[in-house]
Length: 365
Image (tube, rainbow, N blue to C red; front, top):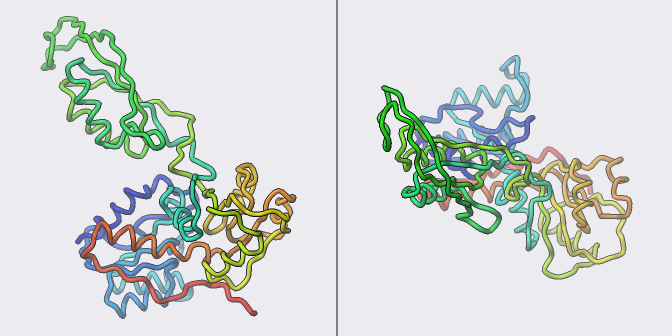
């Protein structure tokens, strides 16, 4: 199997266009055309992980955190990144990362955290608002159903839990083809008026090329008239963080102790307890301090994330409990997420979770 078959599938779930501007998701090292029968899954790419892949003779590493975040001026053995790059290239090991693009989809990293906690009614905490497009296409009336079906089959027309959402309006279209045309209806060099249908629907920006290709294939006209309009609307399937609700109210201390057990946390840093039971939970795997205001606005009782700074705890202002559960600890189940997504699609592809604990933070108890 070619590496690109694996990476293309991951990106169909978590498109690279959903990654944050600072990120570097995608194929970091390697050739997507190379063949492989197995992959090693890890949270971070470290030198011991590269050594593990070499020992196992695995030619693909799938990671959450990219090996390279910033520009590199030298590749030598004086840094761990340099040593990893040298070993991976020397041993023909491809390295792929799905980072904030996997964070920013509903069924991604944060969705996995919600599942582990047992949350229901889960929603994106801060949805993207620039990822949807209004699609308008004009078609002869007899072909309207065929073209609308092509749009829906390509993934267009989904709003929340509804699919096949669209609108149509009758009108008249005019056109005149020159000597180089082969009009489906009408004649060359003659103005033609045709009863047409204006079809409208909504599509995610990321699938626009797929949808337009489907329209052109289904449309009888030589030149297809269509429009795409940017929409200032929230896209509830993509964005940062998530919220969800506990099935039953929990005491604050009991809830954090349960979180401590689920995520194998040595200690939890948190703001003051508020003296009320917890129902709504906001979460963000990794570093989520930038979402504190959104968590408060969402009326969550507690916000779980990592890398909360000292002064950020003051922002709780007795409105919410802020709990730092650790960067690595909050994202550790991403390895399981990769495994479950890939094994369903490629049941005969060999997948192995790395045995290396890559957490750079240690605790003295």
